[in-house]
Length: 235
Length: 294
Ligand SMILES: Nc1ncnc2c1ncn2[C@@H]1O[C@H](COP(=O)(O)OP(=O)(O)OP(=O)(O)O)[C@@H](O)[C@H]1O
Ligand SMILES: [Mg+2]
Image 1 (cartoon, each protein chain N blue to C red):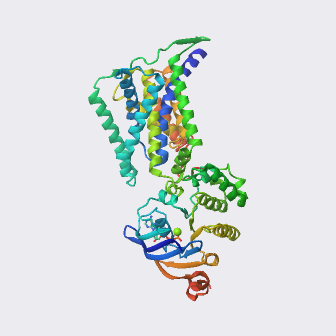
Image 2 (cartoon, rainbow over the protein chains, first blue to last red; image 1 turned 180 degrees about the vertical axis):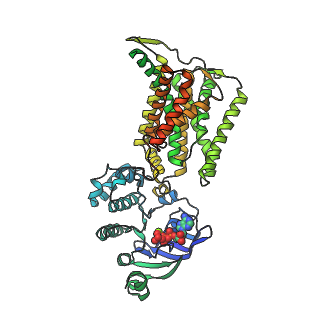
Image 3 (cartoon, protein in one colour; image 1 turned 90 degrees about the vertical axis):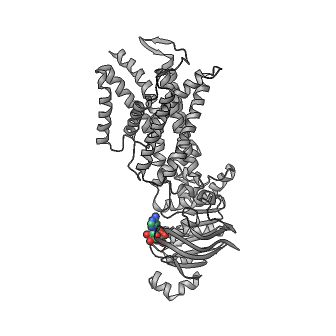
């Protein structure tokens, strides 16, 4: 079963073609990762899928075509994105950030329950609920961004370089959270430069180079692939 | 001496609360769109005219509160309409284009009103004012009403912004508008609401001003609008509390300038105040430099 089907996706900024026709499928319940260097077009692809950028080709979420649907409506369909650089609202408290994550839900009681459940796994956020989110450390902000995205009851979660700018220990922590989220049934599309850790976490993967997918397959196979090792794993 | 100062303080509160109400509209719009809505002063003027129409043309005598709410509703809708038809198409254009468009909208409103009402009009008495005296100070019940309504609206706005989903969304937009749709929040609807609320407050200010100074004219929004804009800049444009603070500071300075100096110094002093504050605090008293809004 496919959660997300991307066919011949293209994204351009004027004359710059950032994504040049990529196709892949994310299956329900899996972690799929796209790895690529700076400027490969990873963020452009994610931003197109979540409706922030116009694109060519087709993106289907659980069979429903997303092209032409505005970003805020796509969230209501069950797709949520943690943007590059976390996208925390630094002038709002941690709690307010979380409330905005649950914007589309009207069932206040269920939201409160979900919030309790999520916070119980993230004690550091729980202690800082009333603090402006801009005063959190980078790792805490990333946790907040993930928690906030989950509160929409997303069934498919897009993550744009969650490891960016974090110390190795925090990266491990974030990835543990991602793994737990996936185990709870959420399909994950993860974009990373840090191929090593992304390939170890994901079930399947694709390599994006200057707007094109050049390799795809099971992550375990890609980890062994000499080209991947040379280009992305520093082997 | 002391009585004179206390008496002037009451006048300052009245003028300051009107400036503050108008300044809020400038600041809210700047917060979400980073533009100056130069048509706002003319919406203020229309608030006074809407009040006139409701008070004179309708066969029934509406209670004060109902007129106030209707004025706010009508001017609020007009503000949202202007955003929809004039500013939204320019959302991705350089900010200067939107600002020039705002100036143009203001001129259209002003001249349309002028063509319909070439001479100043007088607001009928909506509220029979009584003069109260205590401890040698006099205050009219109209002054109490104006200051009370203005403060009430400001408290209401503060609650709206701090406690409601709309308020959170508005603050989130002013921090990072591009990320807000990822929360499932319809940004355009929030921006319309911001204009609705900001213009509604401006309309209320126009009505209150008309109660205090019943002679109203199509051009009354120009100078008052500029002053309120100065108040918003003094407080830190984009900052809600800054707008209120700036409004009261400017009202206070103007009233005191007239009270203690030749009255022709008033505008000289308020513009000098603006310049002085901008030299020492370029982002205003409570404003933040862009991208450091914590
Ligand atoms: N707003 C924009 N306007 C013009 N060009 C852009 C814009 N955003 C991205 N690009 C270009 O598109 C290409 C892909 O950028 P993108 O941000 O998608 O890469 P990325 O893979 O996410 O890189 P990184 O790992 O550095 O985040 C780059 O060449 C970039 O310069
Ligand atoms: Mg990127």
